[in-house]
Length: 212
Image (cartoon, rainbow, N blue to C red; front, side, top):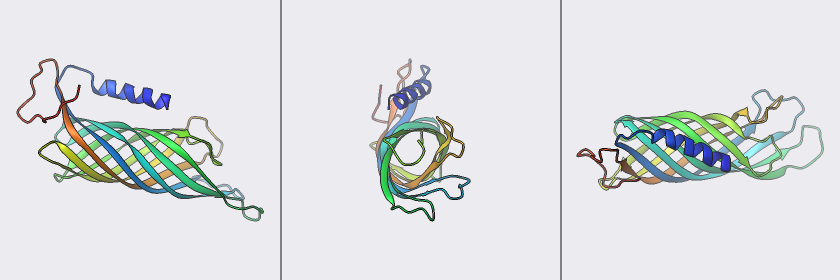
């Protein structure tokens, strides 16, 4: 958790560098979906894992660069449920398990067709809790497609389908590493804000709300 917070603050400090006035969005989200624990090259005779679902929550922060392009980051948590099965021919029962993943994504977002957006980038994942699989702490990829509506009050609502591929690069490399894939739907609510620069002079289209 400490490492993820440090990484988040580094990203935000870079995003906020400089004295220019800029716009951004902040949103809380929650959702659920499916998960899968696997190897890209499965080992013959190895046990298997079956994901049984996730729930997720977090906060997103974006800096608007142009009318159609933003840089995003945030911090999220996804709780993973699964069961592990012994290798074929090996006696034993399925064992249920669960663990958490803290994620810190850094993505580029493109807005199009007025209400739609797509984003993609990298995600740092930090596993919390123990599992019967490999530790999933490492770097991966994330992508999403969604829709957002912003009211005149600058309050916004959004819905997004997404996919997160965790642990493409493990913090502790394995010879035959397992990876974790999440996909699902997230719902969010937030608002657009303005950060006033040194001149303290927003344009006529500035949001009603401001932050720092």
